Image (cartoon, rainbow over all chains, first blue to last red; front, side, top):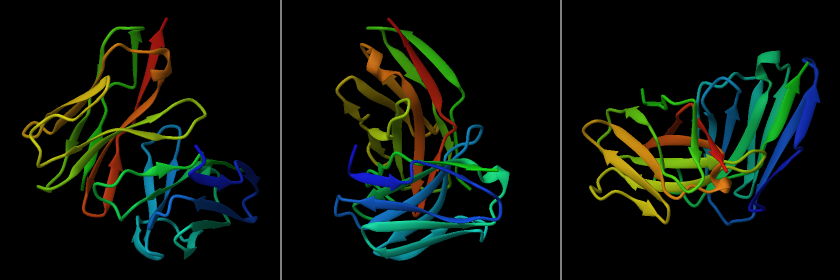
Length: 114
Length: 112
């Protein structure tokens, strides 16, 4: 379970705060993803990066801002969030972009917006 | 738009018995991939099995197998000889092009 790591594991933030989630993969993969997992909704793909280039933004509000400085690191910058943004945020990576490749998931960051 | 439906929010199975989890999907693509992922309690999501749509043969991985019915857009997962460690959330997922869509999940409970 150490191929993809995420920090922090838990985060509580107010609606006016700015915070960042970090993801790191140690698998030599070229693609990385952010997902949102809410209690009552299916897993939602938020962003896709392939070779550090963003290839998908799945209609995510601008209060979520991704950053991919290199193929091993992925950040999700958060600002002025809403309580409905509380969820488990999962990072994943794969050998190539979306397709037949298996995705390897991190343990997630449990975010609570108060 | 692609959709994936898992009609069973919860399932239970007796240890050592067989259980089948249902999944249907809707897509306009002819070339795509289907996956089953497992998310144990408080643990990371892992791939269970994968099926290429162009392959007629059903994928098998040890105790896990799928029943892929392309015309019916159905992709069920069969777990044989269920073990306590199989207890988890199971997600069916469909990928075509650059979009991966997950179903709502099925919580599987295994009774000793």
